Image (tube, rainbow, N blue to C red; front, side, top):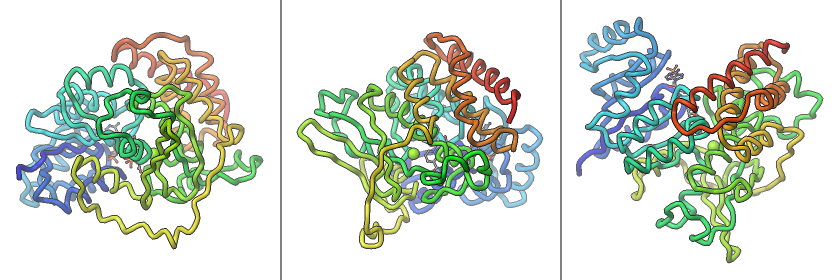
Length: 394
Ligand code: NDP
Ligand code: MG
């Protein structure tokens, strides 16, 4: 069997580490050609020593000799590069078959698009890239024949619940709607008058999933589900009114597809990202992921609730941005990144994240986003307006 050659963008993060865990279980199937990190040089060094990629990419040029020396001392010949252009280079290497896009936030957009343009099999975790640039992204992927496999557990579940022949026409496949499940995060039942006092440590302690800090805060505000609604729109050509959100605190059903005959297909499993990662790596085959069997007797109950938009205004704002179209999703995403960063740095109260994004959406003028330059302009405008809104007070 020829081995699949991989680039892992964001290897040092939560998804990156899980990806290398699955890859390490199947050395006969996968070869790591490039790994990228940003600031966690120690983690990247260990990963390079274990997987011996041809290239590694770090964020700062000063870290190139630091990592290089560490690797040479360990007898590893990996070439170390730095900066955003190097990310695009390793995402589009001619020898690479598949790219895991697991950089967090807008920083992941350009390398993910570079992989799409190069026609790679694209394992997409970086949902912000699709939220910002869905139209441009999907068009580039189509043009180059890049196959996009969703890593986000909900979208991976939807993908698994759609017919294998699905080519972008939901109605043609008899699909009535998509049901995205959401855990509701750590504050599903917290009294509303306590939202103003929520700390970053509380927001990052997710009941079911261990994730990076940014997506953990997004889960706590439910902006994560909002971004996922927009992500589903682009991945599955689904209009906003065909995507419903269902709170399911156990995170066992990862999402569902309802058909016109009343059938509802779901994908279930333990909440462990190695399942969707292994699915996308091996698709259409199946490989061992190191995930324990789902113990339904232990789970005992699956429960469902309607999302509360007063408690979670960010979810409503994401639907609003999706319906508005044009630059609105990119502006929403940018405002959210700035607001979350400010919250994590102690400069913004948790319950102000939603209002900041709402203000930004109301201030930045609507435009079309026909190309990447327009997407990046929308991102910059959203960031500037959000910085102003944050500066107006915690
Ligand atoms: P982490 O914060 O754990 O990891 C982020 C990765 O991106 C790290 O490798 C980090 O490098 C790198 N990175 C950060 N900033 C930059 C930058 N400016 N340039 C280049 N690289 C950068 O995030 P997660 O792994 O949790 O999430 C990654 C993506 O996957 C996100 O888009 C998230 O929404 C999505 N996702 C995550 C899930 C999860 O369970 N974690 C589930 C579904 C989707 P370093 O750490 O070295 O600084
Ligand atoms: Mg998800």
